[in-house]
Image (cartoon, rainbow, N blue to C red; front, side, top):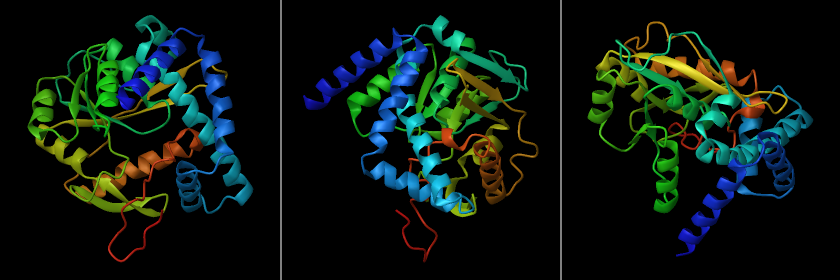
Length: 292
């Protein structure tokens, strides 16, 4: 009962945000982020730990400024989810600027995997693409079933076919071979199964090999995309890049490293927009102490 009441309140709040001007919602999220940053907490500890590991060249003051900015972006993204989940297609289309290095179609002759990364605006880019073209999305189930039901329904409201990460790989392959592209993200620690340790910002990170395996089995190309927050409170920019060359290359470890190297280069362009509050280095290679 408690969770149903909480989720009903959250849903109502997000619906309210969807009816407000985008800039107002964004600024309110940033303001709350600034306040919450003053309170010690688990996410703040994870954030500082990640930044210390990944940016040792920065001074303590520089990392502190980056941490504060990151927290503002993270909380802002929760507020903006109201617009992304409940706003009209017209409103979302107005907010997103698209820049694509490939021609976008409803169906692709070659199976296509759109490889996303957890920047704070990732939801906006995925929702926007689903307005333009049919797509499937691989998602990670949540521990709270009621919350998962809401997120799955809203993420799929423009026709996105939602596929649970713990589901059948055959289902993903069938979708790919039908010509419908699939969106997925592989930059979190999803466990040791089908993963290898490769560097990310010089730190060994447990990284999925499933992307290269799916690409090999389906004969798919892997097309990376990034959604960034545009300056001036005008919305977002969805950047779709050229497919990775020679991917998969036959070496899953080399493919995993390739993904991390691409992501690292993109993060360095806007480090405050990456989701540093997740435990990217949760699992460690044998013999290494826990980080968090």
